[in-house]
Image (cartoon, rainbow, N blue to C red):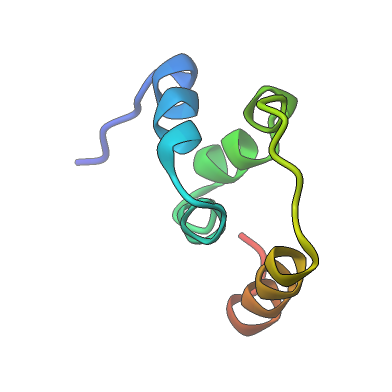
Length: 66
């Protein structure tokens, strides 16, 4: 049984996750991937450093997109 959390709750959970954990979580299912790409998640003023971008890119290449 898969529990479907309301989008607002899932968005709040994602906001507590570090960047790479967000990326890994976005690969769980289509709904979580959509949450990962919501503009509201990235409005917290969090800018990606070059290292974070490289890590995210490497993670995407290793694990593929959801």
